[in-house]
Length: 234
Image (cartoon, rainbow, N blue to C red; front, side, top):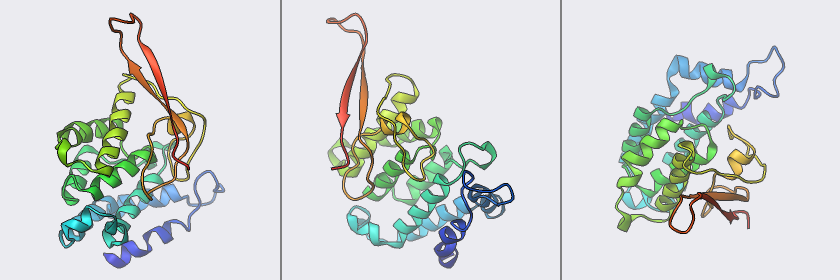
């Protein structure tokens, strides 16, 4: 299992993305689709995550030390598979379903900083979760965390999913200047404006504007949109 995952990304990288491939090429998206169809690599990865997390000290799961473990490497490989599947070709598009999100949460021992850190980055990738799965994660797990125990990545994850779930239900709107990030399934203002700041050394993102919805109240009969400029590239 370890050896197979070790070369997984390197094998997939041999195949060009669909937007760079010639008509005769086997694309990266087709390669991932084939691996999933024949070997169910997502489920294999989930099972491996559980076995890896069981042998880790809880203090590692809650600190930056987890970034140097095989567990975090495997999580990176899982995100790579999901990010590099195609959002344009429905048959090639891989997204985590609700049951798989449950498996992931349980495999990573629930509300650990490791789990919440990965969910935050996965949300930023765009297209890893569909709206139903994001809402499922947010309502079933994130909203039930004890506020007194939430740490940096937990709060950051709450902010991200809170924004995405409310944006998907059209409770508010997001906007921002155009931009993109390699591996993301979404680009432009939809990507840039949907994010609050990513903290620590996880990822470097773009600047943008987060717009919050203010419902009608005693001082204003009309709803208003309040804009908050956020910077994450200093």
